[in-house]
Image (tube, rainbow, N blue to C red; front, side, top):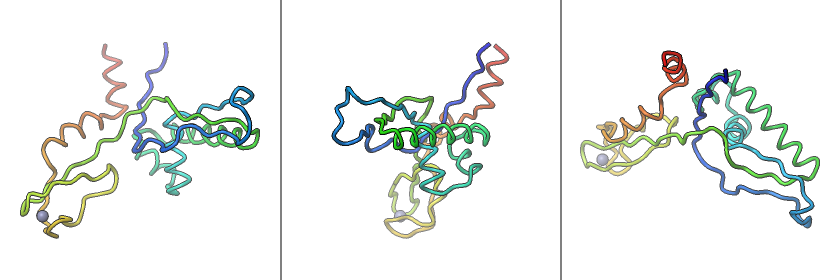
Length: 158
Ligand SMILES: [Zn+2]
């Protein structure tokens, strides 16, 4: 029986999705496919320099799973660079991390904060510390924050 797979949380999509060696026609190139969760793993581990357990938490997956993803990702990038292959970034079992919305109780200014950056210290408009999470975002955060474990347990009951 195939094991149900967890969706990996991804915080931003790549700006460019295709890289190729200059001067070689596409038809002559081999292509390496880098999934979006692998791309995100490289961003978290290699660009932001997070420890694997922190990076795993950001993506909503276990540390061993993160370890497998980052290993595969690095091998693909190395393969593309070393062998002069084209690199296509797409696909993967992902969900986009929701942004959290905060509202200032004093001036009613509302703004979005990316997931994982912590609670803002003060309102960017009036510097008030009287902030709260905006209601409409809580529902979203809950649905996309549904952990893998919960999904797995639900799967077993059915
Ligand atoms: Zn304010």
